[in-house]
Image (cartoon, rainbow, N blue to C red; front, side):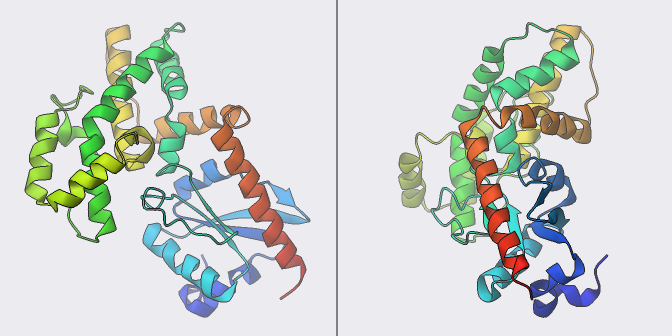
Length: 285
């Protein structure tokens, strides 16, 4: 663990001094490290990779601020959250942001969902189309929820909308069908500006929540769908922990990178970030 002063402006700015021979990439949490390790090279220009988790989105903000203000010698890899839809992504060449809301949104595509179901259900012919069909239901049912959450974030309203668990919005617990009446009721209770809500809904009409709603919420919904499908196929419940599911997603992500244009572009951008950072480090303190 780094000394306490490392959380000060000076400590953050000089974090690279604690890791001689490494290039440092700041990430939000420790669970993000396996994902980002698939994109940043193990070693470049004589510097080994160090993915440094700092505790979450708010903590990362301090590192981003220091990077922008002092040209500190580290890089940052983070979820873009709603910044992508709000057109306010960071422009610094050493900040890499996900091309969808979160890591989870990048990994949870129909092919990966179907692959997990095949493994857990032992049904090797399970159709990708079935996963895509459910995701279409998810997109249609949760679009207004995504818009409400986006407006709350945009205006710093501090209200609770989309959490980490999809259960409050399901027709029945443990069944992955969303109840639009429950969603409409919540949105009505939020008392958001009607004009802004309607304008945002129209502007983002073609934007799918599977890509842009909060990643943990999507993760919860997909896990519910997978559990339900596996139970239907095997005629019995199969326990899947969050950690096990996440590990499966990471394992299935890497083979997709070269064949997925967006993931490949992120890997290329990560290489560019690393090149710039290691060049900066090689110039000395």
